[in-house]
Length: 232
Image (cartoon, rainbow, N blue to C red):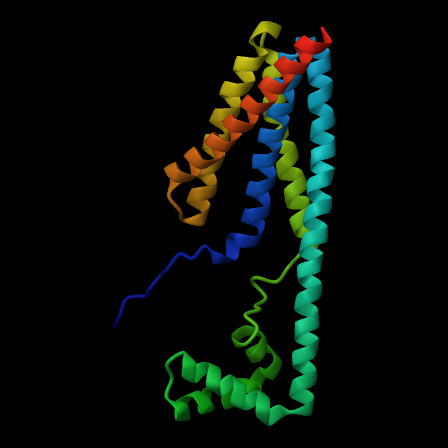
């Protein structure tokens, strides 16, 4: 008796993983960069903290709104495609049957077998068969605007809190190195976790997010130094 075959797949995690990783990464990078820029302008702790909190709230709302609009547009497109496909099935069933058969032939099935598969799948769920094999739409990958918006906002807020903890816990003169150092660690850990969840190379993920985070913080540090000196 053959042993059961178990496989681990990661495709079902793509939707929430993308929104969560994007939100957390943006939360850490944007808040840490904002804090570093304000601190570089010789601001007091209260000003740095206020700027960071404002960035957290504004960023979380922006991420939620952006994800909701983006994913809603995707969902609208999917619904329009399904409605069009449903109408075509109602008005020209045989053409749709031939279309599905040709899709299976192009994927390697013999013509007779392809026709048989198309006939059987369409007999059970014609719209589902065309949505999956012609349009590439499945329930697993269906766009969910609210889920994406909440995941982005929550992950952004969690990411943004981390640099703010450094602002609260270290002496004022250590705010910049503490925020930079801790944020790079957080970014690397997040990159490793995201890569592990997605089945990708963990070290590549860690280096990628840490590099861009460092670049962003360096840019705002220079801006803070330049404008802080000019104002003073």
